[in-house]
Image 1 (cartoon, rainbow, N blue to C red):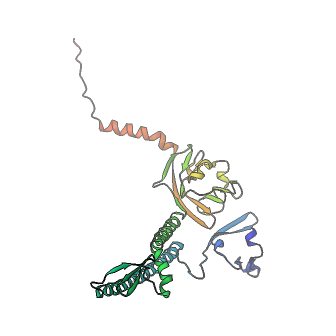
Image 2 (tube, one colour):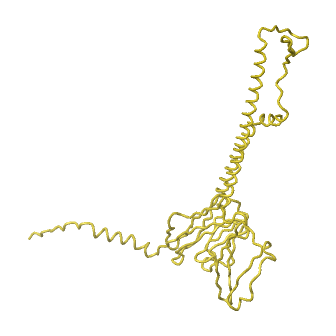
Image 3 (cartoon, rainbow, N blue to C red):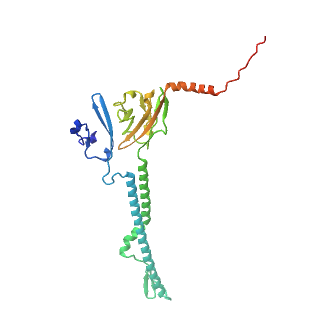
Length: 324
């Protein structure tokens, strides 16, 4: 794989002692997942599965949705503090305006009985010997930026609402985007010789271009069936399932990864694990297959018939006399 070129090293010194440890340099978040160690010696082989979890250096094992939720809370608190600050500024401005208006009204009351004479110049009135202009009350120079901020106060509140809504929506999307694989609520029961369908679904529906689906039993390798890279993989498939399995590819886009096993046998019964991997996210579910033998299929109706015959009362016997 290109992403591991120059980043892996096998500890060869431990091979003689039975150690096949692998070292991955400069691990990244994309490296987390399941790794299978397969050892082959002649015709004998075995494997083991190792799960690698990569933690973020800043947040550790914290779930991404928790991180986003914390960021949302901080942003909401900051915006609320800013809104309170704007309210205080608006209250101070209103108090200043009321103070100026009170001074003007007091000056006008002190001119009681004075005659108003209009001046030739627009916007100017003569009240006694005092000239009063009709220009608006001037705002101190330091309050000019505050006035501009207050004019867009409602815009800040709208922005706060949309930011909170957008972040909460992103948290919901992050929760819903987590891959989840689900199997049937109970076992799948089939008669020997029939075709068994092992149901399995994943949600939400995702792109199948980079999706990998593996059905296996006790071990990941050899597998029962594997779908990877847009096609079925035949390498490392269990010999008893070669040519007997089929993955429903038509349902992949809808979240369905059902597997069909043709002509089931008694040896097929047991647990099957459905593993779905999409990028760095993965999940699995277990499906139990129960196979009934042919003898049970044939003998069950006969057993029911014998039980019913034993429970039903026998009809009374009739005696016939032969005349002499």
